[in-house]
Amino acid sequence: MSELYQLSVKELSELLNSGEVSSEEVVKSSFEQIDKTEPKIEAFITLTEDKALQEAKAIDEAGRDASKPLAGVPIGIKDNIVTKGVLTTAASKMLYNFDPIYSATSVEKLEESGFISLGKLNLDEFAMGSATETSYFKKTKNAWNQDKVPGGSSGGSAASVAAGQVPAALGSDTGGSIRQPAAFNGVVGVKPTYGRISRYGLIAFSSSLDQIGPITRTVEDNALVLNAIAGHDPKDSTSSRRLTPDFTSLIGQDIKGMRIGVPKEYMGEGVHEDTKNAVKDAIKTFEKLGAIVEEVSLPHSKYGVEVYYIIASSEASSNLQRFDGIRYGYRSENVSNLEDVYINSRSEGFGEEVKRRIMLGTFSLSSGYYDAYFKKAGQVRTLIMNDFKEVFNNYDLLLGPVSPTVAFDFESSVDNPVTAYMRDILTIPVNLAGLPGMSLPGGFSEGMPIGIQLIGNHFEEEKMYQAAFAFEQATDFHKKQPVILGGRA
View (cartoon, one colour):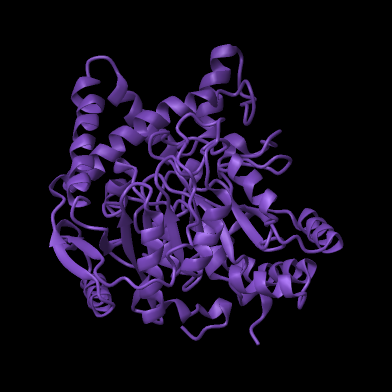
């Protein structure tokens, strides 16, 4: 029998509800795996072992509640999602001592469902990066190969799930920050439709792009976690008022006749041959399952990276103005007047990547350049959205790669930020259009996982889970595990 830390959310739920194991046993098993693996992958910034064990005991003593089938299942939280009474740092020196007085709505929903948080997971500083290399605290390692990056910015969340520390984690996705690390670590990551999950309590990077989402080892687990955190929130003006469906409702149904488009722009120059072959093999699998797969075009996607970095940096420069050394967080001691407090606190508190994006965003919004950059980026964003709208008139889903390559070596992008930015080219258009997107295991290259991406129309996550589950059942990529979790890879 597998160890408890190797089991999925669904498997743990079944054992807990049958009384075969207790919540305390499950949580202890996860912390034992964390003790063994954390020195190798460094996924957590803060662990909350005493609090988690107390919550597990309380669940066991209260007895099983039929309305809370997932009660007692461990989970990890990305450290840019606010948690009452637990440090929330956004992986920045600026917030090294921030102890929030409230929790994000997504965290409150997890607690209402009975999930037990084991702690806060590492990320790129303020979610800016694609390798978890810009964290102030540590560099998280890939669960499959500790010489490789885990992806970013949700690198801690993805590596922790892949290593068996937790069966599920929350991440946030601004330009691919859930899907890319999920692909690099061979797990399932979903960026839901913009507005599906409340952003209340998510430390803002780019307000029109950010979205919280789940990372898990299986497709069904992912839908179960999304069920727990989705829904309208009056505290978030961008939260959708649509009724929240059961995201598992179509799982297990066949996909005969489903129409899937493959954007030709996603299979062009720069995408590694092994990645292209994985997508081609996925096309064959979907066709065997009865889907109709055809090539489509998203002609304005080629402008996605430029548009993204103007919009995201502009919104970041505005959102990060609140970190000024006065209200909370880091304050420089090297000051002689009020102006020094502002300048030195921000200079010393922010890392290089954050400063770079603040400068880029401030320039894009400045008088004389606004029309040429931010306004123009918004206009091109509309063209990108219209491309997707036109394609979804005829197709149910889109299929493509998540990243041009598998996980790369550490510091390979340090000298050239532009190269690093281009690695998000396949995920960024989804955020610009506010669509749901999923990364799921789709192959291997040189021993490292390859992720394939499914993109759905607005608020059609159920269809995405339906197709992904069918693919998962027809392949065995998700069954392979890294050595750190007991596999042979």
